Image (cartoon, rainbow, N blue to C red; front, top):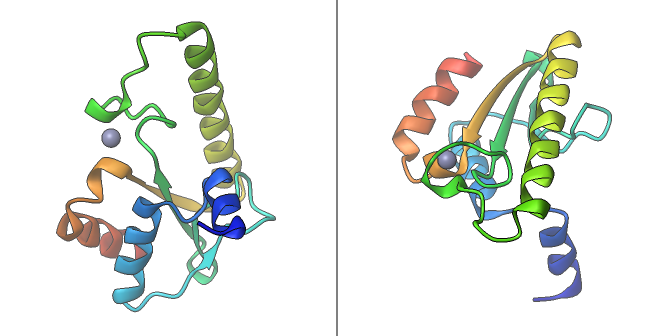
Length: 127
Ligand SMILES: [Zn+2]
C-alpha cells in the first residue's frame, strides 16, 4: 500500500462499499461529484443539477442497527460516546443539507451486496 492510498483509508475515502455504489451509479450513466467540500459533511456523491446526494454509510460507524453494527462488548466507555457523536453529526449534517434544499439517499454498507435492489432505489431517487 503506498502512502497516498494509506492516507485515503485513514480519511475513510474510497472504501469498498463506496466504490461499489460509485460503479453502479456510473454504470447507470449518471454524473456526480465526490465529497464536495462546501456542503455539510462532505457528502459522498453529489448530483448538483438535481440537488440530490447519495451517502454510503458504514454500518458500524453510523450505527445502522443491523448485524454488522453491534457495539463492541469491551471498551464501551470509548465506543458508545464515539458512536453517539457520529450519530449526532449525521443528524446535524442531514438537517443542514435539507435546509439548503438537498435531498439525500442513504445506502448502507450491508445493502451493497444486493446491487439490483440498490439500482432500483437509486433510479427512483434520481429520476
Ligand atoms: Zn447495515
